[in-house]
Length: 392
Image 1 (tube, rainbow, N blue to C red):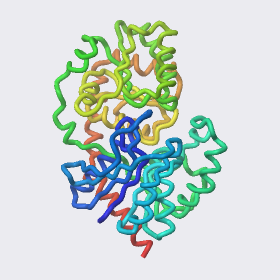
Image 2: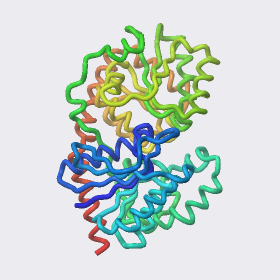
Image 3: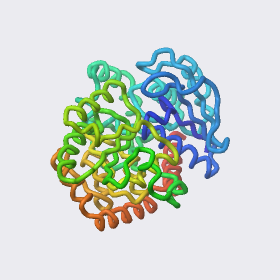
Image 4: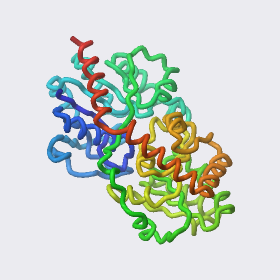
């Protein structure tokens, strides 16, 4: 099958959607599909990732086309427009990632116009929370949606949700398009043999202190305000506890988080590590005692599954769309978006090493069983085939 993925940026600093798309493309190529990624060369939170042009990933099995951007706020790219308009018909199916930006919107429009089968993965963009909290220009977003994205969503072959909870949260839109649920995956080869503990702790000067880990973009939706409030309580009750915040910073919000830390006198216990990738991320998971993700909205939560794969117990909010799966697996604790509940759950786990061990082992088993790529790609391929069949 000849597959085209379209995504706004391919910079790992954009977080889950990029890492998932990259891993999915590689897994599809591993199973013999012809895979291309169409994207821009934007980096996060600003600048460019690399020069425009062609590159390959996954041992040269996946081609990535990086196009320059002329207007960053909407990710407008004349060169990407030309490619999509003229080449989209050469693919069997178009898999579009995200909404509200020119690359996914225009690709969906051209696929609909040229009657090419396409699938949209919203990556959480249809969650009601984002309608009221995440945009400074809600009216412009609603107009953009009405004129461009809603017609694309109504005309899509299928909407791909990564959790049933994500699909249910999008029901308020009344979309008539078919949909399916297939989770994101991980490359189990990266987690089969975990590294020895200690490398991350040594690098950050943490010693043997109890360690709470947050890993993700520093973004308002991630619940970092709740985490900092909760950590003030945690520090009073757990001697020597440390918090590592790992992830790229949006300039203004990163400054806000640092201000919260300073206001509460937590500077000596909170470590802003910045962006990590590759084995360094796994070292962070392995060295932590508890992973925390108190998001106000999270369509899947790749970092949750990564933590589970590293046998790290998790504490997540009930707004992380895989919270039911985590609870069912016994891989961690689920709280409301409440700093007191969050603190209570973390304190309970830090004080119970046997409980952490049991939850960590359960999470690792669940990650291997439910979230590895070969089975996920097979399921997704069947959904692609169904969408293609409807166009004939």
